[in-house]
Image 1 (spheres, rainbow, N blue to C red):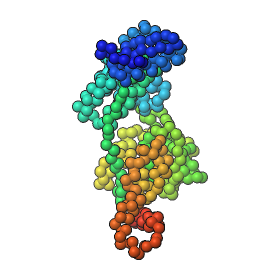
Image 2: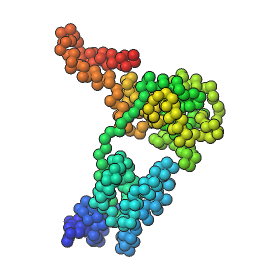
Image 3: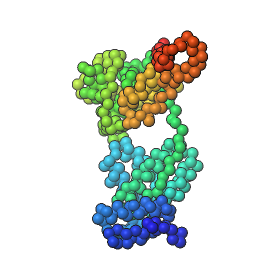
Image 4: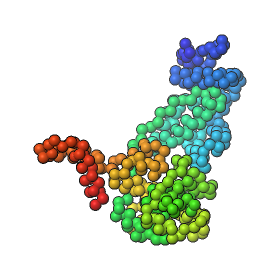
Length: 375
């Protein structure tokens, strides 16, 4: 047997190249022992000897010691500056205060469950807890890869309710634009017509505007904590066609190089200035306080309402998967409403439309819904 329970302790016991290996599992569970056995076999397959002293050394490493080494050697070389800052904040504020003094082989599935209970007691949202667990899992996976003998505990994520999507109605969009002026108005129109993120708007460069094809190439995002341009959230470029109104607004102030939008001080807008300016316009217009991401939601919602396929909306927004874009599915009433109305009108139309294929009624119902929305 590869793993077995002996005196309340789980052991791995196997042979590799005519040599027997028998070791106590760092995580005292059957699943932990199986994971530990797999890690040992991988280490042996790479030709690395299982040195007993390395096991002792690894057992003496605390999570805090390894976490900062992991952040310095792995996170800073593989993540964008914004992700580096986010992981550093999670380590400092949450993970290290709880797991910091524990040795790596003491972080078991039970310890992770205790951490979740503590976070829930502090009224931390499930989404935030899951984000922190993701960082913990990645850190421990690296510990397993680097040391080869660390059994990574199973991490079960909490269930989260779907995020609420706030957006502006067409009338609210008009009110917002009426009370904005100058460059701020142009930025609001750009957000409403392209769905660009605030960092992408602040980092937009003039060479990214294609005047001939009337489109924008989203290839940068401004990260103010380091004052550098980074790649967009999806780590890939995307192309967004320009409507006539935003094309004319940009064309009036066109330039050959540099940032499209600059503060009165000649520098890129800071995040706080960006948010405060939008909040002032909302107060003038008598609207609720919104963030720039609401304008991005508005862009996607209005497209979905008008029957634009969600796959197209996904490409315009730059989502990596269609799962994120599906949050706008409920505001596309054409197909859903037409499906339900078919049940109500089926009896009344049965005689009048006798012999007509159902697909024709279906398409006609969808078209009528789209016309209603446009009106």
